[in-house]
Length: 178
Image 1: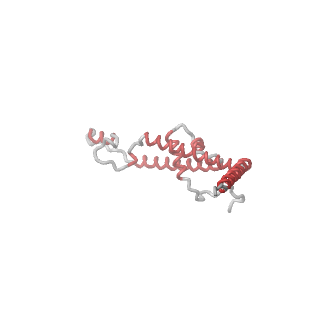
Image 2: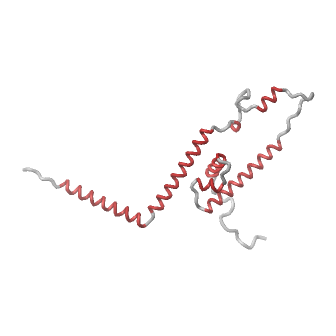
């Protein structure tokens, strides 16, 4: 039997794509592990409480799924077998523990390459600038919608048109010597 009360809000999974914002949130949290998801969302310039809650819940769900996938991958890996005589080959041990940049042969996985700190900081800076510009745009739009500001702009435009009309009119009147 269906539930007697209707659920409030938008249905789950209704198709809002927040993948770019979730990626930016994940980048901010990766750059500063002490940062909380809500603080990271607010640092992107998002102030709407319902949007903050939706992004936070989506981020936590995505994080939980990625953690369970990581746990499954680690439990699925077979343990390396020891040599028959109990002595391990030093070359295979060194190759297995060496970073990908020191291993012989080309690296096939881009995930094994450590992120460059300069690129990460540039990305963080660009995200901060982008958030600041978006916030300034929102503030400017809010101010332009205010009645007193729009009246001041209209009066300034009228004065400007009046001054242009006077200048154009005075240029037409010239005295010609006959």
